[in-house]
Length: 342
Image (cartoon, rainbow, N blue to C red; front, top):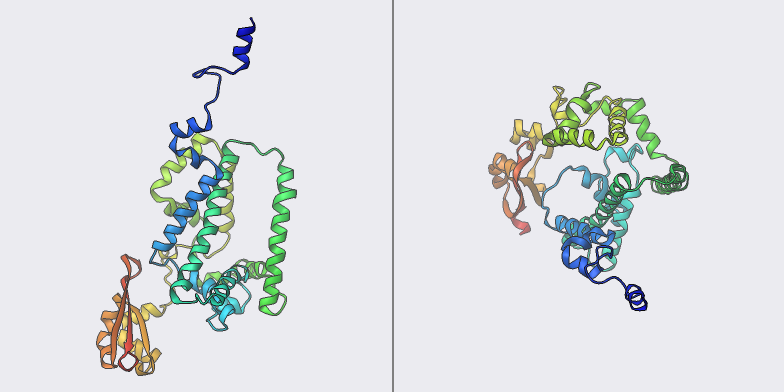
């Protein structure tokens, strides 16, 4: 009796179905077990985002520069272009100020070289994106595995206080940077909703997000998304998606305007492609007043003779993309310089 009691007290023998495997044994049997922790997910997300930031050589939208880095450069170094939105108080300084601080740190460390000025913001944004990935992972665990204990606790002690703090900080920063009292979200709402300012860039029918926009975004994943929604029965999430699309549908201007028949007026790139030499003469006049000219390879062939006649020589060619991004924008970015500058 005593021996049997001591044997049980000493622990279950190896292989007992009732005993959980040790962490070391679990790690040996499941090499990916470390990635199931929050730290593992964050490390993987950081590695992926950093590699992506260092490897990407293309761009998505000019806004990623004109609405952030160009503004940050102006704050940090005193010069840079501000687009029309900043003059009407439609943009907040909260995001650019983060990168302005980064640029100031680079300048203090004497690292404000072109390479660091380009790469450092990407790496900093990669850190933000990695934490976003982590909390998407945590959100999915909360939705599919653990029910929220108290919705009131979440709304009144977490969501509302955090939102209020962010709004207060953003408003104070905007008042400081603009030099007068301005509430950017309110201005944005007035411009886009009440005055229909966004309609200048094209409009779509009210159901466009449901029938074209959203299906175009997920494209081949559409049948799998529908199957997943039906199978998981997460109607709250589906309802939230429908609610967001419905609110966005109130606005006349909707994205993916290339699908619309409303082409609007010709922009500068269209005018350039219509008559390259005439456009250059009209807009820039005498090219000899410029020291450098940067253009895409697809544009280069249209004005190559004009560049050569004005004593420009190619000094550098950068890879851009194998595929078209905007119209004929592809291949390489080319830098030309005056002969006397070389």
